Length: 514
Image 1 (cartoon, rainbow, N blue to C red):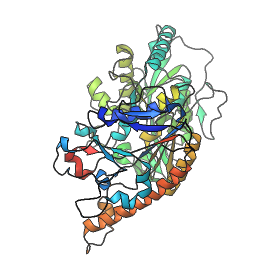
Image 2: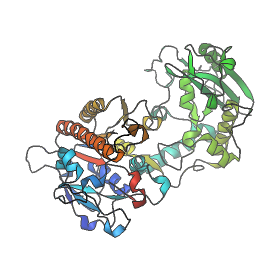
Image 3: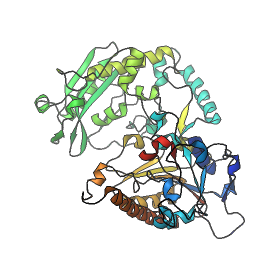
Image 4: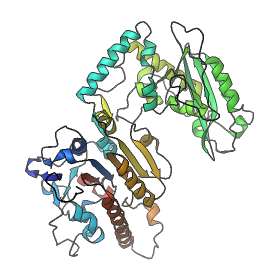
């Protein structure tokens, strides 16, 4: 805990590990994070004194943080009773198996070690398919009782409004469009001005008693500026294809993504412009139409088109992995429609956008027929960010990471503000800035990531890889200690700092992670 000058109101952590019956689990970590900023009970093995004075939480995810570097020994052969639940960082075992006076972290990360009283050891999940998902699972929680009540009341109101036209029950509200990062039409929010080149679907003079269903699917190619529209297909509610156009981007294509898009230079050479494609779509899709898609926000962004009446089967149906994961269309079609799509054939390249659009349309019709609980999990799940946003006053969140390009899964973790950094130095500075602005900040550092073949390819083969691995990791630990020191010294008093590592490939058979 980052401390303020001595005062009776200073928040502190007090551990009682006698109440910890097993190694900590993901649920314990999640509960600790949420309880620090809300009024839910803390895990029984830890007490936060003066919890009301905890102002902020900084949660660092650090793959490669290895408990062996902090003195954990004796886990070569997996014996659950022999693995401690906790390492006391204030009283390290000065003896070690390799003969050094202190564990590696005490020499390479002295500042980091000095700030933490305990390192808790967590058992890896029993299901091997869940290994490596500990970070996202930490961010997932059950919807709170108050939020379930609010949703139930809203649901009852919507059911009455949509009686006799249940398709409209599933149409996203303005709030939901914003939540799911959809382009917002000025029709719904007059304060919105669409960017240059964007269009809005047309309003109608006469509103029909029942809106017509249409489904859209787009294929993309890659240009220097990123993804660009290459094909758009619009399907009517009876499955008839209304429009199927090849679209030629304004910029040169650098990757046709043929395996997925089916596009080639030969196919695209006579394609129409994006502006003409928008014109064709807007002739058919008016405000008397509910537009259906799977990951529809991606199609609308590719079309540079905003529409007020949208439904998305990637959201109406839930992923077995929980939010923010979305179920693949191929999976939903196979399970619920008993229909195989996106199959690879020697004579056919890429996806069939008409086939995909029809699958999304049929999935939506099935949802309307079966009811809102169809295709969803038994438990209503949300993200920590949603839970903190519901508190009054709300707690704002941010998530940062070093990555070459934004990761889609991270970018849709609404309402957290997402930032991608090119370098770890930038990540440190952006994390400092985020901590000043937000209550809950998550930052993912890859400084200690496990050395892979790409890393080791830079090591001369005349040297022992084992020796050079240790040297490289030592240097990385020193670097992270410097990063952490800069971060820690910038924190406001009353900030709780939690650091979580991930599994080591070497220790998979031993089932433990910090």
